[in-house]
Amino acid sequence: MLIVELLNLLSRMAHSRVHKDRGELRIHENLDELGTDLAEYIAELSETSVKERGVFAIAVSGGSLIGLMGYLCNFILKLCEAPYNKTVDWAKWYIFWADERVVAKTHADSNYKLAKDGLLSKVPVVPSHVNSINDSVSAEEAADDYEFHIRQLVKSRTINVSDISDCPKFDLILLGMGPDGHVASLFPNHPVLDEKAEWVTFITDSPKPPPERITFTLPVINSASNVALVVTGESKAEAVHLAIDDVGSDCLSLPARLVQPTKGKLVWFLDKPAASTLEGSQFSE
Ligand SMILES: O=C1O[C@H](COP(=O)(O)O)[C@@H](O)[C@H](O)[C@H]1O
Image (tube, rainbow, N blue to C red; front, side):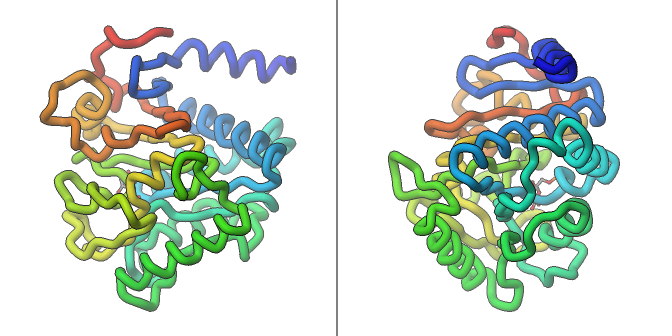
């Protein structure tokens, strides 16, 4: 094993815990450490998926996951520099959005624009592999179009298919979480949390602007091979506690708590402020 890989493994063992039913928790001292670990995690999944399937189908969300420029620059640099540059075959990446705001792609609120400015314009991803929504139609039509497009890519197995339903099985879905516990554009108490039939749905009443959005539904998120929840900052500590700890039945419908991959793996990437109110008793190192 290369020394760098050994050091990475030792550092991961130092901060990784497994919750009895809420997945693996990786708690980091700072954003730089978190960015390095996330970069390594993505690089490993990309390498495995390209070896097994010839492609890597990754869905990203927006918000601070992409917008934290310090973290993001670190993330990009780490993926582009040694040793990651050996394992990330950008030409095999197919990029999707777990949620998108229905605004023009040039609009500051566009999750596509965030990802393009911060990541996609800096790496050799194939432009035709970047699967963004149609921004010139209504939210409902955009959701329908996007689902249709994803269905074609499932048929050709560019996106894998779940072995227990007909849902797409993304190799990785990267999610952020809002202080209210929302993930993608699935907000607390919203009826779309109960959507079972559609893969991609829409809302026109988002409590966080802009109001019109499309979003992957929970069945799609929970069919992925890997789901990572990347959450930073003290403002999200209470929601992290409610999403992970045993807090009683009131919180069972918190969107982040409903992220429970059926056969896939869930990993939380947290910084110390976000993890500051977590209870410690349900973990093993
Ligand atoms: O509106 C959104 O919010 C969530 C969380 O954003 P954050 O800025 O609080 O990290 C984000 O994951 C989602 O993609 C986005 O549309």
